[in-house]
Amino acid sequence: MDLKAEIKRLAKERDAVILAHNYQPDEIQEIADIAGDSLGLSIEAAKTTNKVIVFCGVHFMAETASMLAPEKTVLLPRMDAGCPMADMITGEKLAEFKAQHPGAVTVCYVNSTAEVKAQSDLCCTSGNAVNVIKSIQADRILFVPDKNLGHYVQRFTDKEIILYPGFCPIHNRVTVPEIQQLKREHPDAVVVAHPECPPSVVDIADHVCSTSGIYSYCKESPAQKFIIATETGVGYRLRLENPEKTFLFAYEGFTCKNMKKTSLQDVYDCLLNMGNVVKVDAETARKAVTCIEKMLAIPR
Ligand code: 13P
Ligand code: SF4
Image (cartoon, rainbow, N blue to C red; front, side):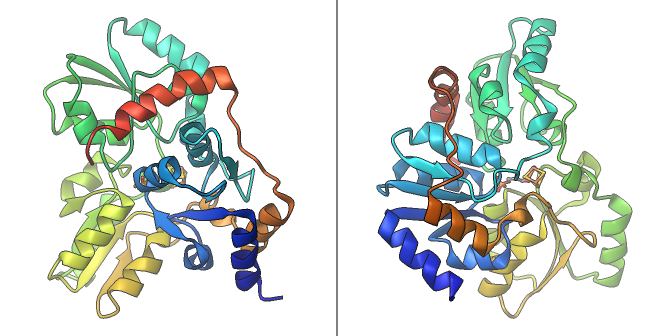
């Protein structure tokens, strides 16, 4: 069976749109109708006219899509594809954190559960975090769960950003000596980092942006070589759009195993069985969707 053709056929039959995050395996990005970063895919989910959304990504992404498009059926090809950073904070832990800092505005990174979003004032992604923080009329902001993204946005504001100690294990693992070694071997390479990287790596990066931001930056840059400090999935489109340029990843095995769980068979199976439906309970969704919608009103 030609799985790719069968997925396309079934998707049409089910009136489904296939969304894929930029970290998904190459063959998943290839069959997707739209690939993008967290912000881009949330926008697509909110505006799609299809009845079904197949979200090739991790759980919080499908949850966000389901809250933005409650009348659609959202399928996650792998129910066990989670985000360890999102799991570093629970609703209970956030309530404790808020109690320790009364009066502060709470901003949650989109990499968080619906339960956490339901207790937050505003949401952000790596693509709009700086603008989201700038839009807030308060002096103290609790930023959860990513301490590295929180530290990054602190560079652009005088407001006090109080950090929660969460992090992405894949991005937090990258070190300055690894980048310096690559720079020694390729002195003409430009360093592009995701803001989930540690502050020391952000300090030495030439450019810091979301995964989709990396595509536009590398395409427009006159440089021929890039050291990329994010998940290797972005290599698919980088190589496709810039066949003459070289992309080196900051360390060997810069991969998110949760993002890589999705296979073509999983996509086919969930479309065939209309299984793996992600749905947030109505009360949590009602509270959580407000902070996501407020975020979508702020430009990237
Ligand atoms: P982007 O929003 O930049 O795509 O990042 C999502 C993510 O999970 C990064 O690890
Ligand atoms: Fe979560 Fe990190 Fe994977 Fe992104 S790369 S989904 S933040 S574990």
